[in-house]
Length: 72
Ligand SMILES: [Zn+2]
Image (cartoon, rainbow, N blue to C red; front, side, top):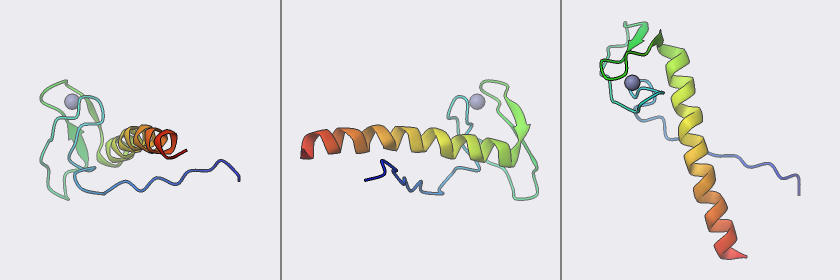
């Protein structure tokens, strides 16, 4: 066993959710900049989406760990 975990992150809202505070910021596909009205974060839309996906995968990894501990 290589110890490699592959975590699938549902793509829903990764473009819209703020990677810092989680607030959903609706934006059109033509909007290139993520600007959060809650925490003031301003970054490129793609950078925000990547950070949001990474954050969600960390949450899911903890769920996987607790499931594995329960199963074994
Ligand atoms: Zn925010």
